[in-house]
Image (tube, rainbow over all chains, first blue to last red; front, side, top):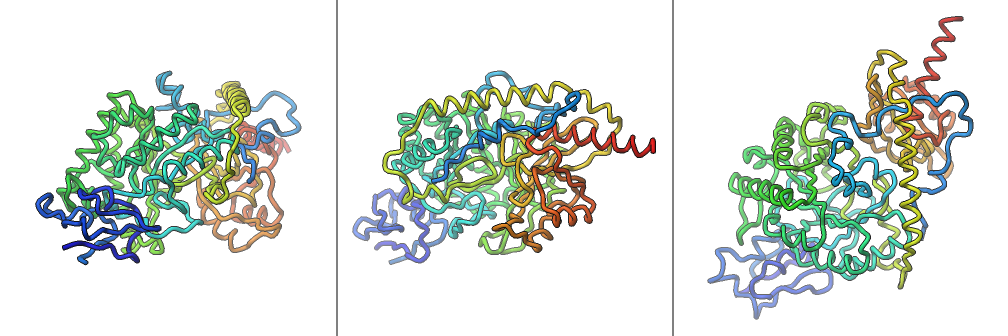
Length: 63
Length: 490
């Protein structure tokens, strides 16, 4: 259970990193990546996965 | 790295021959008597006097730098797309490289060392300065420690603003710009695709309502806290153009001291929603008509250049490409004496300019009734006619009438002269950009463009090079009146 960031659609803005409640997002080179071990899809915390809702470029998808 | 200041040499130069009584200088550039800066309270004037974006007068002398430390954004505007960056583009939301707070400070130090006229550091994106606020306030904290004489400012869409009033005050930021395009949710609904707020993406009327409520609340809180608030509004024909007067009233009520109405920049190549759907921006005439109608509200700002989120230099010039991270010196040395000397020269220069204007403010009336006319000026700073026509990338536009010379905005053009050769197709575009302009004041102009402009019915004036703009206009009017008199006698 995890999300991933499509590299080609990531603009590196970091909105996902800022919103992630699990600190599962980190910068790698110019873009951001999600650590699947830490990603809980925000279940139990929020109605929507925060990275998906915050991404301006719809770059976050189901892994 | 080029040592670029508002050319100190140009500040000292005036046109060679000045015989006879001084011609009248008219009005203060950009400070119309109605709602002019003369009416601003002293403490406000003191705060903005070295801020190029807040003071029309200061923008001739002082430079700013935007540090692009804030890429994240919490809303999606239909006029914005930050995915594509082109170094030749100049528009909000565009940057060439993003900076960490530490890199930002390195860059500011390098620019301050190269430009003693640097007075302001702003954080204006490329996203929203208050979305990922950690980077913004860390940058301000480091800057305060390193370069305490710089003025700090930030730009925001206002969504997160009410949560950060204390942070803003603690950081020593006393200028904040809020982009407010509508106060009616039904209008705003057409401008924003979504907002991310309280852990959810929201759209439509709900998003519009929340955004406006937060923006207005934030503005009220800021002004109550004594922070200077400027409002930016993007004029979008058919969407909010008929509504911006209501916005003007609303922000004035809440204590904003300056309102900047900017034209929508829309191009399919930018990949924005508006660009892709063919939403057009306003013409210069439409913008001016709206600004004239709004004359009674919060003071209108007209010298905005809608700069990049990593802009460097005077407004209207952009040196950001010279200050890439790779090009920064290891240990830039900032010379406080040089900075103080520049401020002293500018202080004197401004006093001089004010005096010239005051000397003969009434003299314009000597010319009797004057049909309002637009005059274009090529200037590279200092409020003087000091740029060659062929080097201009923009013209400052003044409306001249019996009430004086009033700065009304600028029009961008491509540089006509490239490597000593004039470009004919550029001239065609320039003529279009100068639509409605009756005369052009320039430091120097070649024979060919002079003829083309004259053929288009534009009077070309290069007799008053290096004069203050107002003085040059007045002297030209006097010369023209004298010529007419001579013609009449003959």
